[in-house]
Amino acid sequence: MSILSRLRSIFTKRACMHQPTTGTRMERGFRHEVLVYHDADEFLGAVVPFLEEGLEAGEPALVALGAASAGLLQAELGAAAAEMGFADMEAIGRNPARIVPFWGDFVDEHGEGVAQLS
Image (cartoon, rainbow, N blue to C red):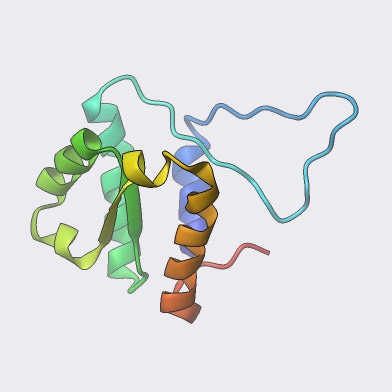
């Protein structure tokens, strides 16, 4: 199962999906997924298996979170965290125009190993 398929499977169970209102439309090929969680256990319960499955499949992982969430996730992942890229979303997200190029650099660096949206 591809990383994108797993993402949809895991996250849409808890996703807050919103269909556009009249006068707008969703673009084909793009979907913004969201994980809504109430506490650290729910966060880790969804994210850890998702990342571990990706690593087992040999897929690269880039995790962009705030420092507190990243620390929590790294502690839960243990040694596996060293196999992933972690980025400080608080720093990257200060200027939202930096997010897409940052992600694009990761995709360019990892090429075919990254799940493609189509």
